[in-house]
Amino acid sequence: MMMFCVLSAQAQGNANDLFAAGINDAETFLNDYLAPVSEGAIYSISGSWFNTGDAKPLGGFEVSIIGNITGFKNKEDKKTFLMNTADYENLQFVDGNTTNTVSSALGDIEGIRVFVEAEIAPGVTSREEFDLPTGLASEGINFIPSGYLQGSVGLIKGTELKARLLPKIKTDDVAISLFGIGIQHEFTKHLPADKILPVAISGVIGYTNINGTYDFTDTSIIAGSDQKIDAKINTWVFQAVVSTKLPIINFYGSLGYMSGKSETAVLGTYTVQSGPFQNTYVDPFTLTKDASGVTANIGTKLKLGFFRLHADYTIAEFNNLSVGLSVGFR
Image (cartoon, helix red, strand yellow):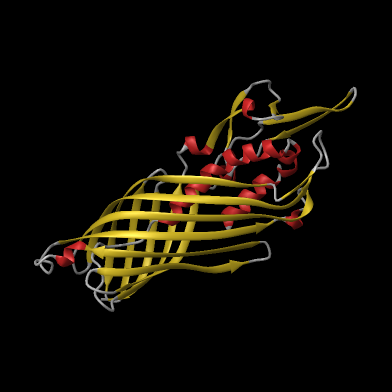
């Protein structure tokens, strides 16, 4: 919810200006501007499917509250992008350059001024100047948060079914929900020496979906109606997991592959009332971002009776710190 609100505040301040550059230029810019935060969100919600390689026995269960922090403080390549006016129909830099490094939705570059100019009548030229938006880092935010409830239950020998959920949270302007399903199978359960082996090895497959909307009609940033951002993210992970099998404290690690896709639809009616390209647009465009890559993970789990605490760190295109508090049986 925080991420939606901050991003929307940043982008909305320039919404009228961006649409004033023409719908194609607005889409081209926003696609590059939002791509890094969409990619970071994909990595943020995709992991944390396990805290051990030891699958629960039949009837064993665990319920967890999991929080993730996906950082980007030192990822300058994600906080900026190179904007080339050759890729735009109307946008030009006021300083006369054809290329400039500008802020993405994660960044903090201010004062990049652009303009659009066109002849609106014989001998009459209209020119509109404005600043490009900055990003989350300008608000002192250098991470993407996520969190949800997650449960797992042991089924047949070596197999564990998992589910995650963030019940729909809705305010006047923002709504967000998450669900996912996964499965873990421990291969070492099939070995004769399973009871005496010091480690457990398993495979995990998980699917996660998140939906979020932000309605900013009442902000009156740009004339129109029913204005909102509708974002959907789907991710898949495939991981090989190994862990120790000790009574109280254990260590685990994994190597895997993640793939995901985000779709961000800009919906509603937008009426541009200034500049040379005044027009009204309805449901102007949908921005998409695909992300995939190898992930590696290391963590530890403390088990004290029914209560468990785990923490792990994932190394990927966007690194992630995950912490979970659990209650379980067996």
